[in-house]
Length: 253
Image 1 (cartoon, rainbow, N blue to C red):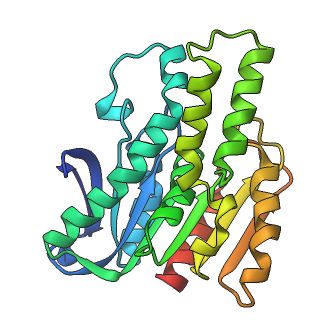
Image 2 (image 1 turned 180 degrees about the vertical axis):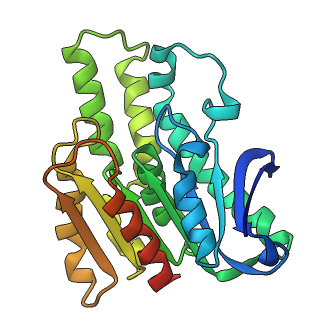
């Protein structure tokens, strides 16, 4: 029987999903991060299937989302996007450490995945943490700086108010550089990576992941890199994508 616990780990609200009989065992760990304006409950099907396969699964709420919502206006939430991404990358480490301290994790078997913003967090986590064994990004972008530039350009085209000077924007962009995996693909070090993206995605541009896949392909002379392109999908994960995600972790973590 799979149990779902709504609890706090390292002060972060999470859904903790695991087989009841394995609850106190050291297990391989998968952390799954939700998308922008979503919440941990929306990816529970991933948690259930992975727990069924024998993993400990943790689905956190990002800052300003789910149980951590603070009634921000849509404009303020949009402006906080990259702060949310960076804080969530830091919290991935905090969650992992807290569970390891409780002796609940096989530390050489940890995976990270996410949808949309969670996929972006996944790429940034790969650029930051060598302890991640394998990862899956669904509709994410590894190109932090390029995506940041595109967001600012779109805001200007829509004549939206940007409460930051050009100098402040430059500093914000520079702050993202350490997490931009497209600038430092060597940090992958051959770790298993699967990417899924819909070609009709109007939110996170498809071409970022497609170009990144071809950029890193020479670094993977094996079966540890996979890119799934869906020519019918927009910004919504398909059933095929989440089943492929589960299978990826079964094979690589």
